[in-house]
Length: 101
Image (cartoon, rainbow, N blue to C red; front, side):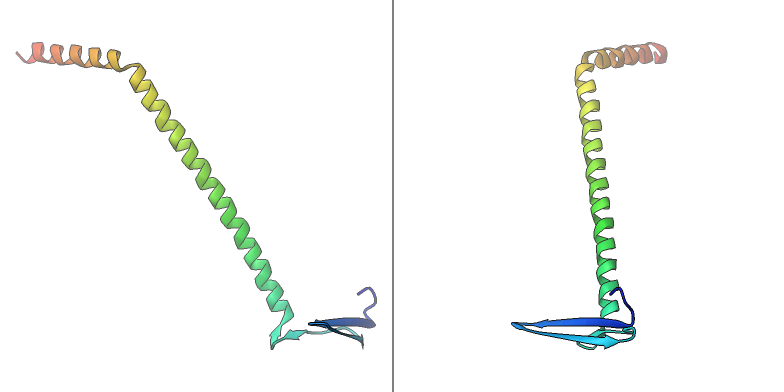
């Protein structure tokens, strides 16, 4: 639509095609009573929402992976240091018993 003086609209319906040349600028196009620009705006909003949902899903996935890795790391550290933790607790309990008696 390089020349605003004349514009062309082509309509495709099943196997039939109509083409119309219009003089001047097209102000509004309606399809089934709805403005075509409204349909385009809705499509744009849906695309934006889809992008936001994808970003949120990716963020949630990354947070879940980080959480699982953190819990796994803490668990493996506890397993690796179980004997040392038990010895420290036993020594603390013995010291507490000695002080309270």
